[in-house]
Length: 384
Image (cartoon, rainbow, N blue to C red; front, side, top):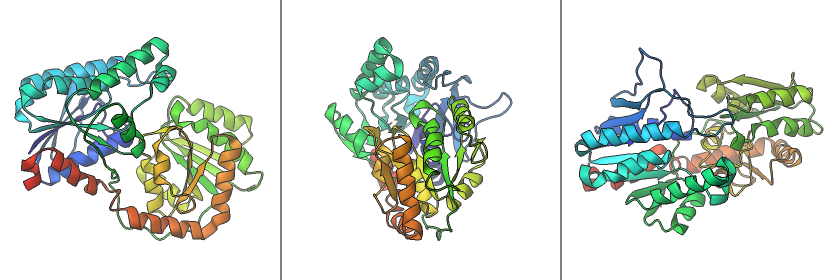
């Protein structure tokens, strides 16, 4: 099969769940003998090239800052990327059997959809998230939010084979009238064998971008509250973003400079090591399309604390009391209470977390999803 993957980001030049998904998908497809092209924005310095072994990586737009100062996505990069995808598929669309794109940024989906009949390719779309109209208004403001919501609705009208990675967002697609939505549970590309749980240290870990929806600053007062009951508790907060300065400000305000490490982005091996010895992962996000880091923690036998919310699909990966707990809110008291429950559960919770991972690893693996993805590309790929 000749497959074109379309995403404006490329791991490891940018880091996130979508980047990991498309990188893993490209590698697996190429390894299975398919001819794979990856369209993206250039995110590497001049003189370098984006590289995925066995995959043709084509930048269809220049290097651009994807996020503004407030952590919201800028509008210009999606427009530029959409135009680049349109031009590429106009010239080369007929060389592909399938074009597989993320729904966001929406203009690349609209471009691929507009040329699908001319290019005679099968259009496959991943919907990591489906935002409500109220969230669009909150994210972009009144007028711009209405435009964003309208463009999202327009993308749902494009003929496509649709994938989601949570029941939350699949239900929203179906409610909007999109038919044939398939829920993929697997995005995890790591080892499928659970590691024997290590003895926990009194440290909680966060790993991810410091953007508003992740609510990373909430970890600082939550740790201060948890230390009332667990005086030796510490935190390691990995990643970077526009809210990192607020994390540092709150750390100083609460007098926790010696108790909270904020090292920025570090090597994946360092994050894995931190998760392995952590008491728990704490993910205070109010909006998640999946929650990959919950699975990565469970592979180490480390339970997770996530926060309940109408836009947080990560709660679907936590079985209460088995591989972690769901805090009622991101308030210091609620997060601290969930951390205290993890500490009280002790080694039994680490053992049950490891057992949870062993039972679910195959279902949550990228390999399991790849089988469904290949079927969606058409009968030729199914035969292969």
